[in-house]
Amino acid sequence: MGVSVDGNFIACEIDAEMMLDKQLIPVLSRDDGRYNEYVPGKRDWQVTVNMGLLLDEAAQDAKSLYKAWDEDLDIIVQFRTRLAAHRYLIFEGKGLVRSLGMQVPRGSRSTATAIIQGNGALNMDWEEFMMIINAQPFDADKPYIVDTSKWILK
Image (tube, rainbow, N blue to C red; front, side, top):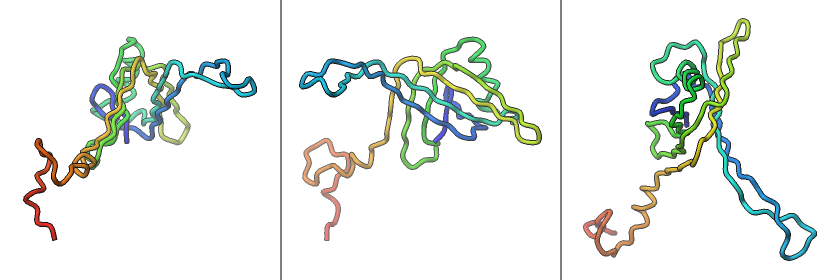
């Protein structure tokens, strides 16, 4: 898994985290007044990424995230599996760089931390291709995903 901004992975990423949050609105209990009850409200999401600060990388890094923060740019952020992964899982949405912190400890590597605040809907795409193939009935009518009629069954 990793973080991609505007189609490019953050090349110097150390670790990343995605948080999904939902506001819960208290309501009066229909059955009895002894327990709290809630209805779901607005949703919120954010991605936090820690990265090397002074690494020379061609893809997205702290410099490009600084530019997005400075110019108030809406960026496309993906929290996703790496491109070589057998199956993919992608969360994607527009975001704004809410904060960008830089740490330069003495005698250690310099790092940066960016918090990208979701700005609208978060979409998910999870590869379920194998589940579709495996769910195809042997005697299914067209269209066939896999024509199993020519398989030799023992």
